[in-house]
Length: 247
Image (cartoon, rainbow, N blue to C red; front, side, top):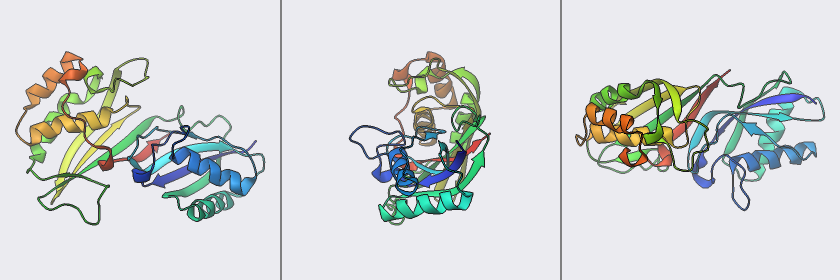
């Protein structure tokens, strides 16, 4: 059976997350239904990352096996046609044949996330549900300094959801950077894989440094505690984007 890689973007606002869930509106199920509608096959797809409810993606990757050898552009355009007809906030930006051993999840060598904070008094009009609106002025340089405490191989229990199903809390964080662009603060995180809620937990923690409540030393203390109770408030989902997956 031909295997296809699908590059996917979506606005996660109306979805219960990527993963298919009984009785819930998920991104995975929306794509599967669109593929089935054009191919007349019952299919299942696997994604590179299980984003939470409200989280967005510009570079999610999935794979699907189809019985027929369709042209790449036909797969992309036909799936998109059915997604549009169903009113889904999901788009297949590219589709292409890949080797049979390609796995969107297990073949990935790195995942890259972006977290966007709108740091101004006025609420967003055009980007509602696409940024974390923080009214108090944040020190992005202080946040960046604190973020460097978390780079490297660590036990990230403090920044792990209690629902996380990963076998180990030890991960290697390759990049965690903060930069300001006017009223927009962008936080970028890269690693081979992340724990459940890890990025949002880390962003919420360094935000405390940005507002002057914590220092980088407090972040180190929280990390070394290996205790979920030591984590700062978890940042909301609407500012988070899965932007790229490396293979």
